[in-house]
Each structure stands twice: as structure tokens, then as C-alpha cells.
Amino acid sequence: MENRTTRFVYDRSPVFLQHLYASAFGLQKRLTRYGHTFRRHRAFFEDSARWSMGDLQGFQDEKVRHTVSTAYQTVPYYRRTMGALGLHPRDISGVKDLTKLPLLSKANVRAAGAELLSEVIPRREMLRSTTSGSTGFPMTVYRTRETEEREYGFLWARRRPGLHRGESYGSFTGLQLVSSATLRPPFWRHNFAANQTCYSIFHLTPDTIPLYLAEMARRRHTYLQGYPSVVAILAKYILDRGLDWIHPPRFVFSEAEELLDVHRRWIEEGFKTRVYNTYSVDEKCGAMTEYECGHLHYDMDYGVIEYLPRGRDERGTTAELVCTAFDNPAFPLIRYRIGDLVLLPDAPISCPAHAGPIVLAVSGRTGHALVTRDGRQIQNISVIVKRCRNVEMVQAIQETRGIVEVRVLRSPGYTREDEENLLFQFQQKIGDVDFKVVYVSNPDEMERTDRGKFLSIVSKLRDRGAK
Image 1 (tube, helix red, strand yellow):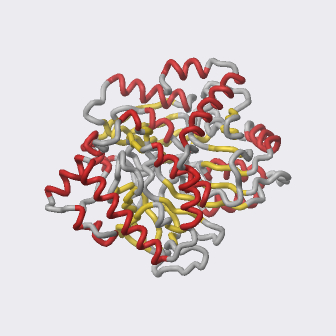
Image 2: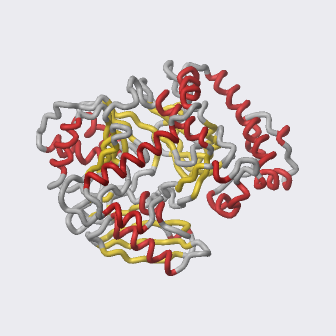
Image 3: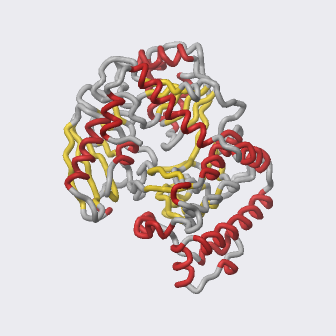
């Protein structure tokens, strides 16, 4: 568990010990993810990838009935909510009846608290994590160990084509691997338990990029995963200088952000590889995957996704996602408004490879970048938001290099100590930036896109370029 003490010890430990700490953390994750039900779930998702639309619809109806019935019997929130509406599980025969139930907002989840947890699963047996806050509302979520193993069964069955566990790979996520005060390499740490090299996204500058590329070439990663905006910076450096990347990874997997067309082009040309797009959320309630066919498919065997229309343009209809999770009895989320938007085609697109409906794009998960005084670009603040306490929303806005306004919507229990922790987290992970906290009284005071999408980072710098 990270706190100021463990962070202090980690940051001041020799690099070789930090590698060991990262590996110990990786070993813990491996033991959690690959237990006795992992292979069963992997085999299921390998088989269901070939199902017809009829098979998928029948499976969803069966899962919805089971999920609603279990939630009604074991979760106080759903028993109370359905009772107030005069509903019983027998009234929900499948996906078409989900609209009888109310939408579940993030505010509802916060207000319900422990009432959304199962009465029959001991709290000590639940895994707990904090969502990234990419939609502005970081939350604590719970799941069973089997839910976690199901997640990784799905990943290896559907999102790692032709790959095997244990192959070398590089990750570009928001983990704070290296202190913001560190100015000398290495800007990466190794997780020997998974043959993974975790690269800091907070130390990328024109001067340090060659060091990253040299390490990546030395490691000869089989694949890369993480924020596409970060991998694209490295690829653009390769293209701008006419470098020849002689050890291309087999694949790059885009995660946690909107994959922009320009980023896909840079990555595929610079690293001479193929990019696969994915959509998933920490709440484990909805998934979309780009397969070999090149389409982004809604994975109907993973959970139910409903679409609430929000407008349209020349490309299609923008819709908000509403998700119903399967196989998480500890913390069932039914008709949950995740906060993300997608672009849907005007008419269904046929694909012989997979029966799941095609989505054109996930919209608005990519913000801009914060720029420090020394030129580093910070593409994502999710790791920071996860560590903030008693906040409803956090947004970073920058108009001047090295100065950032942090807008905060506070929870009722917010204190001076929480403000100090918030500033500590920003300074610890970014550094070389002056932060000013501005409190807002409601979500409408947060800046949004033309389509109403919240961005965790808003850059108003004149020289922000392609971002």
C-alpha cells in the first residue's frame, strides 16, 4: 500500500532495489490475476469469440437475469431500489427489460457507499482499487478474486493475439516509477516477475527520448502497451529524424485513451508495427476490442452496453455509454453511467470476423498535455487523481508553461489535510510546476468539449501543437 512513508523509502532507495520493489509488486499482481479460474475463463472467451449474434444475445439475457437476481438477493441498494419501484427479479427477463431499472450515476454510487456491496461476501475477500478519474469522478471499486481472473482470461483470449505470457514487453502508463526530482536515467524500472519494463511517462523530453529508445531497442520488446499519446511521441521522434527502427514490436496495444488517427499513423510508421485499439474501464463493466479485422467491436460476452444518444455529426451518432457488469457479485453495477462517449455508425456494419456490433471510435478520453518549465509533457494525471482524497472531480488547466490551475469539486468530508495531500501528489509526480487550487461548487464549472465531454487536462498553451 502506497503512502508518504513507503513513497519516501522507495524514492530514496537505490535503483536496483526499486527494480526489486517493482518486481515484488508484479509478483503480487501475477498471483492475483492468474489463479485457478484463469484458464477456465480464458477458454470460455476463446470459444465465445466465434459465437453468432443469436448466441451472444441469448447469453446476455441469461447473464442479466442472473446478475439482477443476485443483486436483489444480496445487495441492499438494489433490493431497496427495486422494492421502491415495485420490481422483482422475475420482471427482468433479459436485456430488453433493463430499462425498467433506473440509471446508476457515479453520484449514486458514492451516496450508496457500502449499500452497493454484497452482504454475503466478506469485505476482506474483496479486491479494492481506485478508478483513474478520467471522467472526473475517481471512485473506489470492489471485485472478487475470480472477477480479476476473468478479466485477465479475457485479455489473453482476445487482446493478445498470438502472444504468450512471459514475453518481453514495455508499458507506458501513469505509474510513478521515478521521482519527479530525478534528472538522470534510468527513467524506467523492471518488473522481473512479468518480464515487463515500465517506462516513466513523466520524464519524456527531446533530450531524454533517445535514452528511452535505446533501452527499448536493447530490450527488443515483443509488444508495447499503454497510453497511445505517449508512445506516439516516441514514434514521432523516430519519424522526424529518419531513424530506422530495426527491432519492431509485433504489436502496440492502445489503452486508457482515445486513439487518435494521427497517433496510430505515427506509431505504425515509426515502430513498423500494428496498433490495436481497446476500451475497458476499472469498474470491469464494459469492453470493446479491435480485432484482426480492423474494427472496434463491442464485446457482448463481457457485459451489456447501452447507448444514450447525445447528438450527431457527419460521421455518425455520439452516444453515452451505460454499462451492466457480469460476474462481479461483490459490487454489481447495473445500468451504470460510466461517463464515456462513443461514435456509432448510422447503419450497422457487417463484419464476418466477429458478431459484436462495430463502434467507430471512443470519443473524448484524451485530454491535452501539461508542460513543465523544462519542457516535459505530462499526458495523463489519472495516477494523481487516484491518490486524492475526498474529491468529486479534479481538472488541470494550463495557460502558461510551468503554471497549472487545479480545479477541485470537493466532497463533504474534504479538509485542509486533503488539500495538502492533493498538492503533494501533483508536486511529487510532476514537479517543476506551480500549482494553484481553485474550488468549484458544481460540475458545470469544469471545462468540457463541445460535445459535453469532461477532460482531465485542458491545455490553452498556444504552442501545444498536434495535441
